[in-house]
Length: 188
Length: 188
DNA sequence: ATGAAAATGTACTGATCGGTACACATTAAA
DNA sequence: TTTAATGTGTACCGATCAGTACATTTTCAT
Image (cartoon, rainbow over all chains, first blue to last red):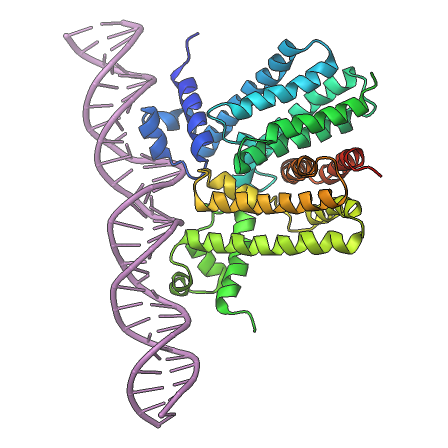
C-alpha cells in the first residue's frame, strides 16, 4: 500500500511542527510547504489539534521502533541494551535535524495536563519508561522501576540540555551517569 | 524604592507568560490581566520580544537567589549543599504554581539558537551549571565540572518529567540518583 | 489656579490566525 | 457521452495578532 495523501500530510506536518513549533506554524504555512490545499487538510482532520495529535501518534510509532530496534541490534544482554539505549540517544542528538523532543515541546505549548496533546506526551513518556523498566527487570536490577525512571531523567535532561546549551556534553554525560547507576543497581 | 509600574508589568507578565506560554499570550491579554494600557507597555518595551527578555532576566535573578540562598540555609558543607539543592528542587516542583521551567519552555518556543531568547535560556543554564561546579569543586569531587553537568541533567529531567508525567516520582528519583553520583564522586 | 509635560485609554492599522463557502476539476458508473 | 459524486483550489470569514495614532487625563512646577 503506497503512502496515501493523508500519510504524506502527516509526515510533512510532523517535520514542520517539529522544526518550527506548533503555535508558530499556521495552517497557511502547511498549505504552502506541503502543496496540499487547505480544503483537503480539513477533509482529513477536522481541526489543527487533530492534525497535531496525528503527527504525535506517528512520532510515537517512530520512536517505539527506534528504541526497540536500535539497542537490540547493538547488544544482546538486557544490561547491554540499557547501556546501548544511551548510544542510540547520542546518535539521535548528534543527527542533523535534532531539535529537542517533540513531546517535551508539545507539553510546553499545551500545558494543561488535561489537554489531549499534553496527555499524549504523558502516554509516550510512560511507554518509554515501561520499556526501560522491562530491560532493567531482565537485567536483574534491584529496583527496576526506580532505575528506569532515573535513567529516563538522564535522557530527558540530555535532550533538553543539548537543545538549549548545545550537543557537546549532554549525551556523553548522560551515558557516564547511566553507567554508574546501572552498574550499581545490576549485580554482575 | 517602591516597585515602579514597569517592575509591576514585568512581574505580572512573567506570571502570565509562565502560566500560559509566550506565543499563546497576546498583548491584549496582558492589557486585560495587568490593567496596564498597551500604550504604557510599549513605552516601557519597544516590542513583545523585549518584554519577554525582561521577564526572563527577572526570572534568572529570582533563581540565582533561590539557588544560592536555599541550599546554603540547609547545609554547611559543600557536599551537603549539593544534596540540599535537590531538596530545593523538590520544594519548587511541589509548589502550587509549578509549571516546568520558564527557560526550557522559552527555548521550546524560540528554537533558533541564535535567537536572543534562546541565548538567554542558554546563559541561565550555564550559570546554574557553573554554580553547581563550584560546589562540586569545594566538595572535593574528582571531576567537578562533569559531576555538575550530570547533576544538572537530573534536574532538567526531573523538571520536564514532573511537568509531563506528574510530580509523584520526579524529584525523589532525581535526589536518589544524585546521592549515588555525589557519593561516588566526592571522597568522604 | 495655570500651563507644560508626561502618562494613559480608545480606537485603529495591516497581517495572520483557524476554519469555511463555493466554484471548478476529476473521476467513474451508466 | 451524460450524470452524479468526490476531490481540489481560491477566496473569503470573523477573530486575533503585534504594534501605532491621537485625543484625553493626570501630574506637578510655577
